[in-house]
Amino acid sequence: MAQTIQLQVNGAPYEREIEPNRLLVDFIRYDLGLTGTKEGCSVGVCGACAVLLDGKMVSSCLTLAASVDGSSITTVEGLAAEDEMNAVQRAFVDYGGYQCGICTPGQVVAATALLNENPSPTEDEVKEWMMGNLCRCTGYYKILEAVMKAGAAK
Amino acid sequence: MNGFEYHAPDSLQEALQLLQQNGEDAKLLAGGTGLINLMKQRLAQPAVLIDLRKISDLNYVKPDNGTLRIGALTRHRQVETSAEVKERVPLLAETYKHVATVRIRNVATVGGGLAHADPNQDPPPAYLVLGASVKAVSSSEERTIPLDDFFVDYYETVLQPDEMLTEIEVPVPPANTGTAFIKFLPKTADDYATVSAAALLTLGEDEVCQEVRLAFGSAGSTAIRARGAEDMLRGQRASVEAFRAAAEAAKDEVDPLSDPRGSAEYKRDMAEVFARRALEQALADAQARLAASGRR
Ligand SMILES: Cc1cc2nc3c(=O)[nH]c(=O)nc-3n(C[C@H](O)[C@H](O)[C@H](O)COP(=O)(O)OP(=O)(O)OC[C@H]3O[C@@H](n4cnc5c(N)ncnc54)[C@H](O)[C@@H]3O)c2cc1C
Ligand code: FES
Ligand code: FES
Image (cartoon, rainbow over all chains, first blue to last red):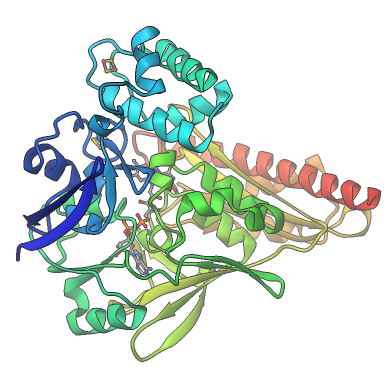
């Protein structure tokens, strides 16, 4: 039976009808048309679908849209203020933290969540946190560098 | 994923009523990291899903009279970072840190993790050596189940269809006790263990092992204790030789399955190695604690 959910996405209020088995990743991509969030593994391993749920990084591929009724979601589209990239996005551009780009939305969402919690992490802390975001192009050194620089810039 | 009827009750009582009304057709949803994956693969196909997200009073870590009580809906990440846990039962904070990645630990709950009952999980062996028990409630009854009696088989526990876990009770180990959890990860740091081992060692006079507990993950159809090895060490002086002999015995108490993380034979050999290392680390931890308390 369809039900109605109300939530904030990137600061704007939404109200939508969904089926209970709608996954959050599909809701974001197909119902809201926010295609920055990607689906890679569908089992919680790769991090391509990472979004912030009430500020905490979660896998939208393992979350029901029904479960986020009343919550606040931030997707990669919501990280920039107006036309100004956030520190993490700026650093990914400046230090080449991406190659093909498919993992990049998840990487910048994850790194933003890290810096929100721990504004200037050590290299080990970055590695430990970012371990859940796979990059099939294996651009890990540049990603690490970008996150370190974004941390130092804060 | 198949369709289902969705409920998000506001209270524990309401959740228990829904469970009772729907019996085997219903499933509880906590963090969803285990269940949603099973539903996507159609290994679980509940007709009714009871989402526990609005039940706010089962999310806590409370010290209570020599025990630590952890609410079933407490997230892995909260246990890992809790000052209470780090101070009283550091083994738990350490063990949860090894589960998957921050993104999973942000949502996975303590109760959901135990009810999931995958023998490859990390927390169960740690809870076994700590002598933990769980509280299970239904709309008509409440019971306490020692974790030693909780796991039955792959993805199977003694919980009845109308029961829900509400709390984990963990005895705080005595002061002269060391603990360790180690996880063998030959592939990637976010993987499940090829084998994992947890140890608890309480030292008496002359470094005699007053109490010893040893348990494994990924080494059978459930997390398992190596009681034979424990018996060999209890009352003995802690020594490299004694640990070596006990670890060798522990190897015969495990019953691993071959899978992509290693053959049964390899896991059995690694169980011996990791048992020895876990015991050695628990001893070093106990010695460090004794030395620190002596200095105070
Ligand atoms: C990518 C990935 C990697 C992982 N890696 C690891 C790892 O390295 N180590 C490890 O230990 N684990 C690992 N896990 C497993 C993870 O620990 C479990 O999925 C998690 O602990 C389950 O908790 P949950 O709250 O998400 O439970 P859910 O998925 O919500 O529920 C799991 C089961 O428990 C039942 N249930 C939930 N709450 C209760 C309750 N209060 N009372 C009774 N029954 C209940 C549900 O009905 C369901 O059957 C991994 C999982 C993923 C997705
Ligand atoms: S698609 Fe969700 S973690 Fe990979
Ligand atoms: S940039 Fe291609 S997968 Fe990471």
